[in-house]
Image 1 (cartoon, rainbow, N blue to C red):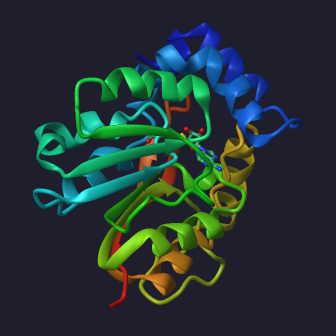
Image 2: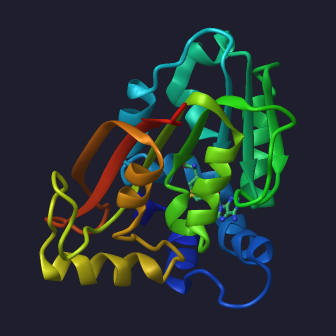
Length: 240
Ligand SMILES: C[S@@+](CC[C@H](N)C(=O)[O-])C[C@H]1O[C@@H](n2cnc3c(N)ncnc32)[C@H](O)[C@@H]1O
């Protein structure tokens, strides 16, 4: 379903992320009116999600954490692979989205849903993989979230990230350089809804992890014909 077909969702997006209150309260106010339509309205926008899900090298028995998991849509994208995993923990700070995630998780006895901050929450024991799917751009202390993911991984553990981004004016060798217009337009466009495409996410991930796949693409935006927003897909391993 298109974003434009849901007036409540569109109205909330037009009003933007509230500027006051705790992060959890602001996320709740922003997402509560959209929670039931979140999944059906994001498929045409969050193009990196299925790409990342296909790329993740998930062996039987692995323990996985998704930080900023929202409604747990990743479970559907991973499909039957979920039931062969050792354990999956979905972590998010937004109660209305987690209510949807809990319904989804009820189908999988090996999935737990946790209401907590991605920058500080730690599992009881190290895990084999951590996923961020369009979450880092909504976390102001995104570098703490990445460092927190690094801290919870076993040596050699897998990280998989996808999100909107813009390039640095002078990106590291091998990365795409976006035009000045793109570098200014997309942070302004998304910033209203608390989404901050950032030129430093991908270089920071490449610095902290041994990079596997680094993919930069653009994807269509519902309601903005002809415009394509840049996103990346990153997989890496914690250094041993
Ligand atoms: C755009 S949504 C993406 C949700 C989901 N991963 C997906 O791919 O559909 C961003 C998510 O980050 C969550 N989030 C933002 N700040 C957070 C924080 N500090 N700790 C945990 N989750 C956070 C929001 O509540 C929201 O669910």
